[in-house]
Length: 135
Image 1 (cartoon, one colour):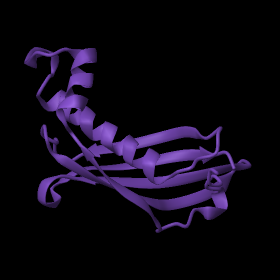
Image 2: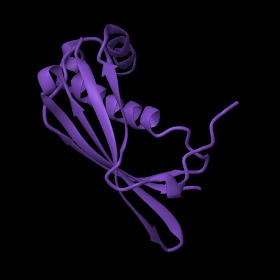
Image 3: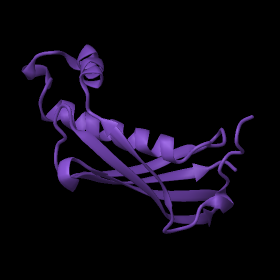
């Protein structure tokens, strides 16, 4: 039996939606390198790979915290501020809050803030995801 999807009415501005730990592990690095390359000139084991892992952590945090989602949502906008680069093997703590919601032109907009931190709480990123919610 599956749970009912989260509805627009269920979002409460200021509420914690959830948190998750994503690990920048060798398996994730290998997947990234299979697309972009395995040598430092390709960005492997460096800032480009690490920044990508931060974005992946942000999206996985959102997808796992805000679930189940109704079909038909639209990812309307995203802001992402990198504060520091995660390093291989680092755990990324991802925290998702509902920061607001609004009805505009008969559409249901949801705004989520997503924060990521690394070892000893070191800030990695702050993000805002704006979605048009389907239900």
